Length: 324
Figure 1 (cartoon, rainbow, N blue to C red):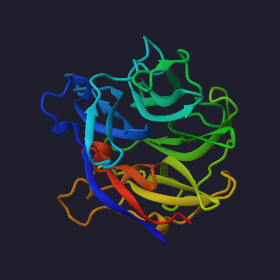
Figure 2 (spheres, rainbow, N blue to C red):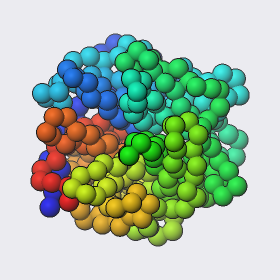
Figure 3 (cartoon, rainbow, N blue to C red):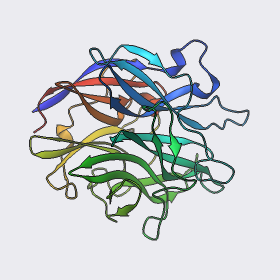
């Protein structure tokens, strides 16, 4: 058996004095690249809202110590990726972000945000490549590498990319249905997978890969996969369809599933090993979401979001026991 020992909150942009307008609040969609001397943590922040309350998300990073990942050694002074141009799929935001190293380059996959009329937004997944060690990324083109299609008509988002045995795997969320609620339309989305030989051209598997726990309107996101002891382990987050943004039983929780072939998954959330804090004033007392698992040396860690889906920032947990 295993569990995650919480180490605490690493970063909350609202606690930073003189923060720039583009890194005003939120720290979401975290993902790491482990360098010899530090761990780079990419995350998505939001600009200061305009007079209409609208904002856009931007990708940034901070570096933490390999010896103590709770210690921040640098915070980027610039976004790593430009927003899209007029009418492009990523004109109004880049969120979330997943990075993977390949042949001396870093490939970054992100959700590009488009504003809509009848629903708040739509998203597709874009790709950008860094040749300067992950300081900046250049888009491979003006369009997405994965987007809506005949059997996935709504938003495509939350990419997590891994390379196993020379093949690329993208775990992502596909919108199932929009519904009209009292406050705003809400989207239901499910975890799915696509495969690629080069990281650019993707083939969708066109099926849900995680069974529902909360019923058919359960939403699932951020399927982060790691391999250990002869098995693939996925940590993901899930929520109810409505009333999930603040302190309810419908808010995000972290789930767990395992597989031997990356296609067929057995869900067992009791093994996830992490829950909300039982202290009401803690930063993660209402929800835990968007997990990212990584190894540094002999240790395995998880980054995850807290209350209000990362408005209070992201924190760190350390694996105790072995994934089995």
